[in-house]
Amino acid sequence: MDEQEAVYDHNRYRQLLAEAVDETRRLELIEIMIREKARDRLEAQRVADRAAMTAMTVARVLGQSGRRGSF
Image (tube, rainbow, N blue to C red; front, top):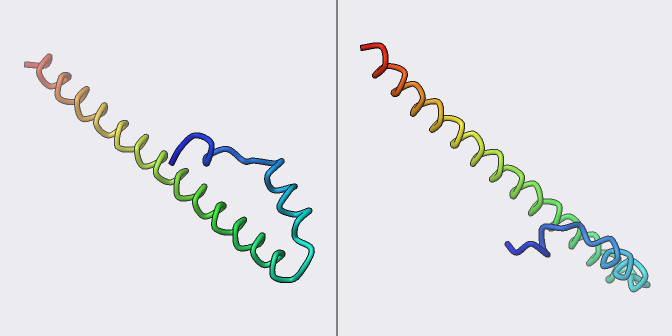
């Protein structure tokens, strides 16, 4: 996912809304917004998972080095 995709593009949504002059286009806009919100939530979950794994790794490394110092 590139950086541009990860940013909420207010102008793009405004343009899509202006172009949604019939039922088909309005439904397409709704589908796009739902799909992109789901993508944003997935990316947020990935970031949280990475942070949790990093914290666990740091805790494990610090825990091991603490045991060495107690011998």
